[in-house]
Length: 148
Ligand SMILES: [Fe+2]
Ligand SMILES: [Fe+2]
Image 1 (cartoon, rainbow, N blue to C red):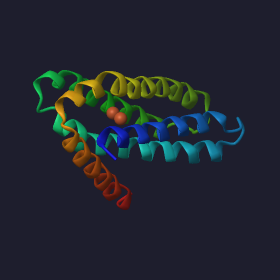
Image 2: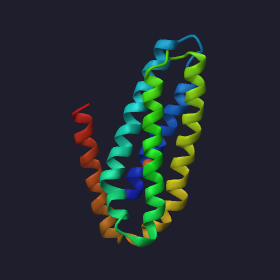
Image 3: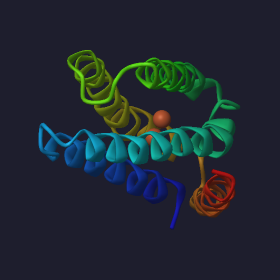
Image 4: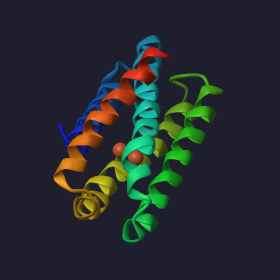
């Protein structure tokens, strides 16, 4: 699996979890919290692994640096919102409002990576490099989940 396939696979999982969270019964706050925690862990691991592999390699390239920095800034914003949500009561109106904004930002971010950054990165990485980075992101993610 190359880096593009690996990232896309994560993105699909993230989209799937957002969809699952939206589908939880309105009254079932325990389940809402559970799916949210799953989404939070996946998202944080994905961002971290992506930063340490894909973006780390990409930022060396002058033509891709600007887009790359923009994506990293968005990772930081997602983290901030996730922290804020940690202080709210899961399933409350405030919590859902905040989640709605986060959902919008995340979906936009994933799309931007796939539609804008991937084409740039395909020019920067040889297919051999893309495969090596694909292996590397798998290792980094494995290490992150092993430590929570
Ligand atoms: Fe990202
Ligand atoms: Fe991503």
